[in-house]
Image (cartoon, rainbow, N blue to C red; front, side, top):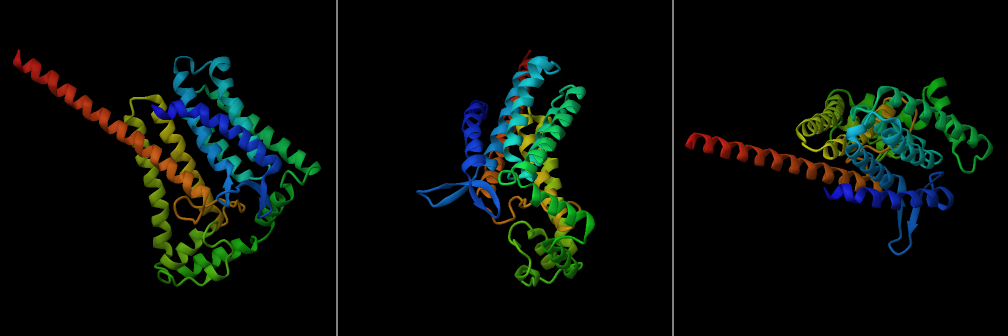
Length: 319
């Protein structure tokens, strides 16, 4: 598959981009997550590209190592190194994205039959790396946003939430069962980033409980359809690629929703395919394109198998 060939190339591109962003990235909203493209006058969030690259690479590596997938040296170590490196580079300026990428790859390894003890080891290493980043941030706050993280955690644990979360809950409460109607939101004029981070609250205000539940069911349906593709996919690479990309979308969506209803601290994550966004929207569309490409391959493979079985049946009947 062409995506398997692209995986190492994308990794080679993504790694220098992450290093460059960490050292020289443009600061926006108190975070250095972007690099500017001078000719186009656009900002590019490198972590969105890195997520796709890493998921492609993990899926490719797992497909190539199926014969010795339980091996620590031959299978686990080559997979864990890029996961830890990418998450460590993303975390200082975008902890939530790094954490969700780590969870996605962790689940990919678990689903891909990596030995359970190695999966647990990866989880422990991940916790150790994130703890180390917190410690480094205490001494180098200009590079690691520890102060922002503590404010969000303290606001979540010891108060009713930050201003955005409070306004978000007001919007959800105002929506009631059927909502105020399309375009009739009041909180969109008050709630910061109502078009991005807190778009779910505005949906609930305008379309009510019914609209909010519908959004959740759409993402669950997406996950169900991805599992259906995975169970029918004849190739390990295609199956792992689909489940990895889908988990990335669905986990991000539920993290965004959880912030709106104050189940977790504020993260700054968008709601895939709904929030207004630049590179986030672009790479979500790219993910869907790859998933649909694998789905088409699965359908073609199933059709060819049926045709072959029909031909064999016809030959047997002739004899």
